[in-house]
Image (cartoon, rainbow, N blue to C red; front, side, top):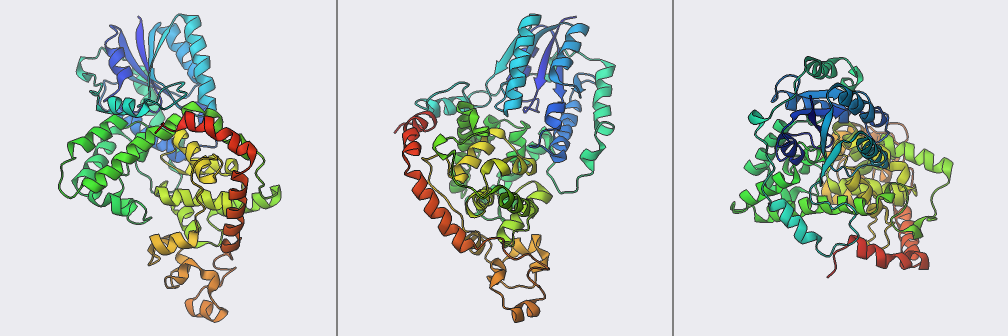
Length: 487
């Protein structure tokens, strides 16, 4: 029996799913396949929190299908498809293009070769409004609008001719309990995956939470409630960007919401914009976007390792940095402003190369999206040569975005008794004040590993000086042409 295989990757949903729709129209029985690839299970960009999210997404899919219409494999993709081809004959392979890490790109090239050798046609659908191989942005904005406003690609699940096997139903049950029990031992409070959960979060945003979006997006406390919280669902494809954008259009006339909806829409556009950057220059996973920064001075190896470790554990002695890191470890989420501050602090204040922190941060972000992650790491690290140089002062961020110290004290309970604004600069406390507030710096909470005022000034001097170097300036023109729309 010939079948059409829908290869699920970061598109874990059943609605607005063009590969599924095309497979359903192929005339062959349809089987959905997801591979927990050993290559990715062992990749430092991922933790158990991600695979928990994926598994809950798959279980939600399985609940809506006949038993056995979803096959979950723990083998690599090549072996999985080879076995299916031997058993059935794969008439066509259907999937979304993946804008992923280099290892998934190399895997896709291998699968393309295997398909060609086996006589299997691989039908790939673009991801969102990202254009494979794009070298300029001249008409990209118009294309984005066209894609986002297009009709969603919805298959009638009841009319699909599903390929069902008992062993495939067993694969879902086995994946839920047997294969990786450690996925469920990682402590933390994470959002759960699935199209159902995504819809509930989307609905709650437009019901009430989102009205204060524009006024809350930069606050580490308020953003937890008033930001959309859709990012993991977008990253893992429980909802398409088009579905999110069209929900905005449906709510566009809500009284008192316009400013927040405009701000939210810009973030949806921004989502594809940065993934497109990565698609157009995927080497940014390994090297600076602007090669003129290749030899930017960084801390020596031993010092960098020591500072990196303190940053990773949330023990730098700088409260706003440490609170953000501990929140991220526990929940998988912090808002964008605080993410930018974490990268800025690592690269500018601690003088650690962005490549040393990128996989670790990715492993904490439940919404890790390779294209956005590496584009943002480079932008915040200041190694593009054309973006605005931003060196965040963690003290200033604390005073402005957490003026009462509520966020800091939530994640650094050892500082609970220190009043704001001192809680953002505990190194200013005298020995008598430390005794008064019941905290001993260097024991209960670390002394700062850098003087943030001095490190800010040093980073500022270095970056502005380096930006003027001929090898940096020589690359700006072609980078702007590739990544920025012309005026």
